[in-house]
Structure formats: C-alpha cells, structure tokens
Length: 258
Length: 307
Image (cartoon, rainbow over all chains, first blue to last red; front, top):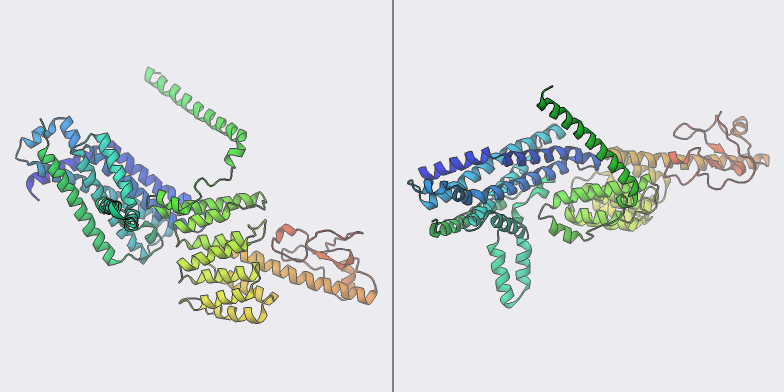
C-alpha cells in the first residue's frame, strides 16, 4: 500500500472511531445480542438458535447501517469542510484518496465486527457454557458479513462521489435491499423473453448478490458451509467491491471540485 | 441548594412522575382496548411474501413466528379455548421460513394433534406439518417417530404408524427400538401395552423436558384407564356374587376384592359411584384419560370414600 493511501486510511479510521453514532450503534447491536438471551426464554427449544439468529442479524444489520451512514459522508463531508482541497494539494492523487477512504472505513467495520462478535460469543458461552465444533461455522458466517460490509462500503463510497449524502444513503440502502433479491431477479430473467429478458439479466448481474452471503440460518443449525461457497463468495465480493471502487475513482477523477 | 442542584432534583422528580403516570395510563388503555390486544390476526399470511420481506434474515423471522405460535398456543390453552385457528398457519410460516427448525415440527405437531383443550385436535394438519419436516430433513429420525405417534394415537391409522416407524428405523442414528415399534404396530395395534411402550420410550429418550412432562401425563392417564377398567370389573364381580352394586370401597375390601382403598397416581382415592362406576376425584389432574371421567353421574346416592 502506498504511503498516501495508508495515511488517508488511518485518518479515516481515526475519524470514524471518534464518531459517537458508531458507539451508539455498537451498543444497540450488543444490547440486541443480550436481549436474545431473554427472547429464547419465552419460546420453546430455540434459545441457542435465537441467540445465533438474532446476534448475527444484529451484527449484519447494524454493520450495514454503519457502512452506509459513514460511507456516504466520506467524500461529501471532506468537500463540505473544505479539507479535501488541503489533502489534494499535497502529494495525494485522487484515486489514492478514494482507496484510502475505502480502506479506512473497511478497517473500521472489521474492528467493529470483531467487537460485536466478541460480545456475541460471550453471550453464546453464557448460554451454552461451552463451544461446540459446529460453532466454527459461525466464524464463516461472520466472515461473510464482513464481505457484505466491504461491498456496501464500496457502493456507499461510489454514490458519495457524485451525490448528496441523503440521496447516497437512499441509493445504497435500495441497492442493499435489491441485492437480497438478486437470486429472484435471476430467476425472473430466466423466465422472461425478448427485451425484458435482456434487461432483467443485465439488472440481475449488475446489482450485488447479497443472498449468497447470508448463511445465518444455516449456521444456526450447525450446518457446514462448503469450501467452494467460501471461495466464490470471497472472489465475488472482492471483485464487486473493486468494480464499485473503480467506478468511484472514475467519477471522482473527472469531477469538477472547484 | 444551588440553582443547578434544584433543576436536577425537579427534573428527576418530574421524570419519575411522568414515567409512572404514563405507565398507569397505558394500563388504563389496555383495559379499554382488550379486544385490540387479543385480536387474532395474521397480517401477512403468505410465508413466501414474508420470506421476501425478511431480506434474507429468514432464520430470525422464523424464530419470531415460532415464538408467536408458542405464545398463541399458550394463551388459547390458558383460556381453555377449543379454537386454535391461527396455530396451523403460524407453524406453516415458521417452518417455511426455516425448514430446519426441528423444534417447530416436533412441538407444533403435538400442539396440533392433541384433542381440545390440550391441543387443536387437528391430527391431519399435524401429519402435514411433520411430513413437510421429513421432506426437508430426511435424516431427522425423530420426525418419523413423531409421525408414527400421531398416526397411532390421534388418527388410529396403525398401518401408517407402522410405515412411519419403519421408515424412521432405516435412518442412520435412529434408535434400534424404532424397528421394534414398527413390528409392534402390525401385531398389537390398539393394545394398552403398546401405548405404554410408546410413551415410555418417548419419556426415556426425549431431550426436551416439556415433551417428557407430556409423556408422563400420558403414562399416568394410561395407568388410570387400566386401573378404572379393573376396578369396574371387580365391582361387577361383586354384583354378580351379591346381587347388588357395592355401596363403598369398604364393602369390597371386606369382601376380599381389594386390599385397601384404591388410589390414583396422584394418591387420591378413586370415587365409587352407584352402578359400579369408578371415577377420579380431580379429572383436571389427568387431561388424557378416557376412563374414569365423572360425566353424567347416575342417579342415586354418590359415595366418596377417603379411607
């Protein structure tokens, strides 16, 4: 990693961890994990399953919210505060600024996820008093959640380069929702004909595929995750995030900052 | 006290008073709108639509729907209701959202199959639920076991019960007595001994405390059914010998028919009614008995012996 990218990333991370909203969201995520311990008691036979489902869903949803709401302000906030001009007047190229911002937020999310995962595993240990071999798959589910964050961060950053924060948040959130329907979109494309088929197929492959990254329900039952799924999900997420990042670099490179 | 201290105290007092007032108002509102809170409604009845609405977090939504089914069943049961119209759709939604939620099939089938007020009295829906579970989880041998139970006890379809136990016995990891059960179905279907064997095996092998408690209730009910039947036969024997029904247990003890006053599994003495009918004192202690229920007591004097 070049020195300017590392500097931008480090400063983005510092700025993010100073944000009080971040701590509030982590607090609520941990609160939900704790609530899962109580939730299981009003049901029958699903204390452990509900803890895993609620815990991992909380980590995922709150992480996506953090990724979107911090991601959309990455560029616009720098422009608003005029700090962007100071940065770009130094030997920092525009693409380095974008990659550094992305790296900083992605790292913030990894650290957040680690903290929430510690809380989640502590709650699991409190409930079950021991870990099982199948609990290893929970780490895979958390890894997939991090991949999801990487894609969402890249998308939020892309929108942040050409749109207002509010519009960027709406678009990123909409794309996240559509991404959960990616498999349905492909099925719809396969069933349609003519121009509709072409358009639907194009849309199905352009929107991110978040459906395959969500294995929470499977790991809650201790079902193993295929190594091929781990590999393909990793490759897909990195490629998609790289594409979104390149899009952000292209837009930002040609944007008139005056 | 400083100005700041006064503000803090006043604000704290107003805060506490407002919260208490709000809580009291909510209680009042709950009283006014009891119908609204107890309303039976499925706002989204389609599991497929819910699947889409969950944005992929189907596991959590399934847990919520399973919990809703448990709470609904508990409420209806508590109210001694004979209507469980939301139970089947709630279970259907929970198991479609998470087809591997085995607990929903196991308990859900019990809730659906048992006769009211202990359940919805819909064994066909219970069979559909467990068959769905078997299709989604073919390696879960316990589901075949549940299926056999419902076919045997609730639908009295002994051939279907034998088939379910046979299919289950072929699943790797199934208990060896599943094969014995299949054989028992074809040879001794309908026997009290077979029923006792089934409930005992469930009692001994289940990992769930709730299912164990339920099995214990059924075992006690079988014991009562058997004891009542024997006691009524003894009373009939007394009548054959003396030409009249026994007036009390003491007469039967004196006649050598019994060693003492017969007691039910909760140690309460049975009641001997005119015409030799034997009933339990507290029918609520035995929700699954078919014999010994008071029903319409025969006219004439009713005797209750405690000693």
